[in-house]
Image 1 (cartoon, rainbow, N blue to C red):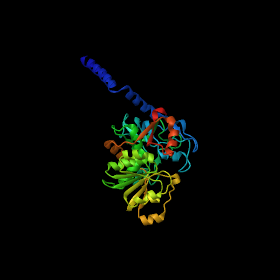
Image 2 (cartoon, rainbow, N blue to C red):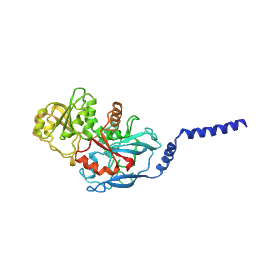
Image 3 (cartoon, rainbow, N blue to C red):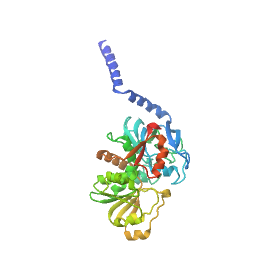
Image 4 (spheres, rainbow, N blue to C red):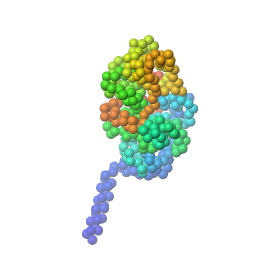
Length: 389
């Protein structure tokens, strides 16, 4: 009798202790896990309905949370110039409605049964891709963005059979479902609003800088000081490089110097670049439109590299080959970076306290922010507060 009474007492105490160990939020989250896995996930977002109009509120559904998926409640989403190019058809015809956004930071709300990388409550982010074949040599080497078979699946606008809308939908939304491999762990110390731009602007500049093997004392040129360019300055400076910033906006001078640049060159014409011919160890351009490139390229030392990461309308650039055969500079382009390298830049920025310069906006201000991005008025990355969607 004593044993039964003691056992009942122990079980009662254990049950109470177990309830106390979980906050009401945690208990709610766990109940939501099973519910979300049984059906599609309802989502609110801002979508482009055609290539000419403004983004509008749109309610839609994402796929149910699969065994290898996580559900992220989005807290912040950065605005990238790529969002504008895509929705406005600058890179080819699009399917609409389409929700842009590939700088996504939030909190894990549910996990599939096979997920080991995340747990409910973790900080997590999604960058520019959400899938690839995972079998080809590029994928196996951690370059999923260069998948050789299916190609990478972009975070928005890519055909996706599992999506109720037929295409992937991006981060200007309240939540997102993603395979755990393609989600980035955001360090506890990193504020989510600062983490978001690192998932595109950060990795897009970090990857070519690392490939160039920049080191202390190198003279690095950065062309175009916007969302990507200002992070390129901060990252290069953190490696000990002397950074020379090339901009057409005199108004950005004081900001650029505060980012750590050694010198600011305001370019009004090709003659402003001639004093720099053959002076730089490496140059990266973030300019997202076609421009007179040849004189910029000539600023690099012979046989060194000039990397273009900004992607103009239809990807079209004009280079004067007479300049190239005499300057002997190697020109290349660069996409984003693989998942492991994206995690690397996130961890590096958290450790070294490298944060993007951001402006938090409400969802209702997205269209106005797009106009300001086009007008070079962003200082320097607009980040949407997803709570306002």
